[in-house]
Image 1 (cartoon, helix red, strand yellow):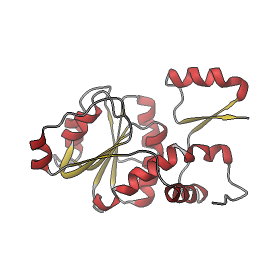
Image 2: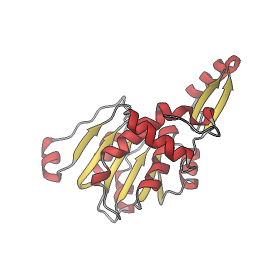
Image 3: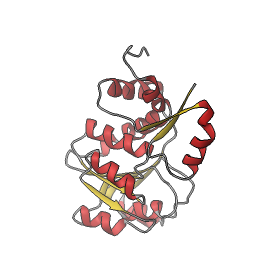
Image 4: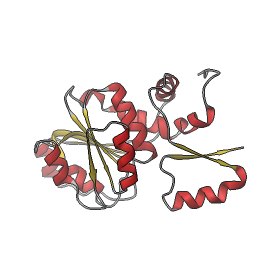
Length: 209
């Protein structure tokens, strides 16, 4: 892969991890997304923000964003999602069903994978829907009768391939996606870590040598 000379390397740096992970997860389920479908993005931090932009490039679907952080909800709105849900760590499935006319989401991308998100996501899926897990830390407890009766699918994701990276870099170089990057000098590394732990980095942090 050869980057354009004009490519902002610092701005593109998170594509090699966050970007390729997102693209890999989205690409795996494109076949399950109808043209007029509803897609929910759980967690609109660094990965979720990339996901919203890529989804807007690849689909015409309604995108719903779910987050417990009001600031990240506002970022998702600026990126052009149709609706938002401020979850505040609570069960958001009822609101998700309301926003999809009680049908449920066709696909849910969970970039949190903790707290209430796994169970709420399963309850917010439509029949035949796909729950795609990218974040982790929590647990998923689903009765087998739910999986069988609703014909839902659960899919895990880990990083991606070289081809995924090549595809998302091309989108970036065409100006289709932009990453929210906080830049830090090497001597500011401790400040960067503190901001990360405190949730004060809205997208991705990059240390510049």
